[in-house]
Each structure stands twice: as structure tokens, then as C-alpha cells.
Image (cartoon, rainbow over all chains, first blue to last red; front, side, top):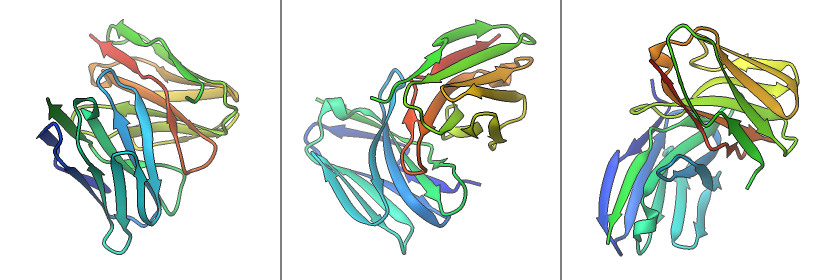
Length: 109
Length: 111
């Protein structure tokens, strides 16, 4: 069973395109997280959301708690955005994260 | 960046040998986690710790043990490594449930 599902698994875009990555989850959550992992491994946190929308530079994350769905948008994509984007949730109970399998994004110049 | 290091960063070992991975933090965070990352799977929790000498199992704990004798160190031991434990291992720390900070990862190959 997978508490967190992401789509698409792989995504290739031309530089400048608007990108959307989707995340659906099946458990009650206290927060949802978007993480970024560049080739070579390091994982960094981009956003933590419990409602609404957050923006950081060209990245926008939204969450719909009722529909158990979140999206990560990248505007004016750039080759340096190429990375794996991981959705994770903190369930209402326990102290663990559940992770999606990630979306591998490649932005071509 | 959170002060979290992992050692070794790369290791190749043979089936049946014991292996210990170390996670070290300088942030004095209460919680520490060990994950493994494999193609086709999300990060999966092996064990976690919520304080010195307080640990609990995650979803893929079979074949692994952990110890935390000091706040700053969390050790992951494979008592007898198997090829199925070839993976990339990440340590993470957090002070609350809201944000985890990840180490750089350890790539382990079991031949």
C-alpha cells in the first residue's frame, strides 16, 4: 500500500515551460512537504504546507485538504530545476513521514 | 544547512559481513531517522530514535539494528549484510514533526 502517490513519475520539459507535479495521499495529515533531490543525492525541503498555498521564487505549492491533493508548480522552468521532487506527508498520528516515490524532472535548454 | 554528516559515504562489502553506518548531528535535535532509498520506492523508514537510548522500528526494520548512546550519534548496523540491503541510506534529524533535515547519504553495495 502507498499512502502517497505522485504523478507523473518522469517529466521532460523545455526551458521556460510551466510545470506541474501532483501528489495525492490517503491518510489524515498534519502537514505535507515537498522535497527536492538533485543528482548526487542531497535532499532539501522546499515547502511545508498544512493549508492553502505557498510561494518561493518560481516555485508554488498548493494543497486541498478536502481532496487530499497537493500540486507543485514551477514557473519559467530552467535546467537547474532538473531534479527529483518528492512529496511527503506527516500523518495525524505518529512521528513519521510517508514519502511518494518521486517525480524525476528534466528541463532541456 | 543543518549540521548532519554520515560516514562512510560509500561502502562496498561482501554478503555476511557486519556493517555499521554512522549519523552525526551538531544541532542537538531530539529525533533521528534512518531511511533507505531504492529505485521504484519512496524513502522508507528503517528505524528512528526519539531520544538517547529510545528507538523504534520503521516499516523495513528486518535485518537492521540501531543504537543511540549520545544525542549526536545514531548508528545503523547490518548484522550480516545481504545483497537486498544494497541501497542508499539517508539519515535525517528533526526537532519536531514538521521538518526533517537530511544527511548527504551513504551508498552501500553488498556483493
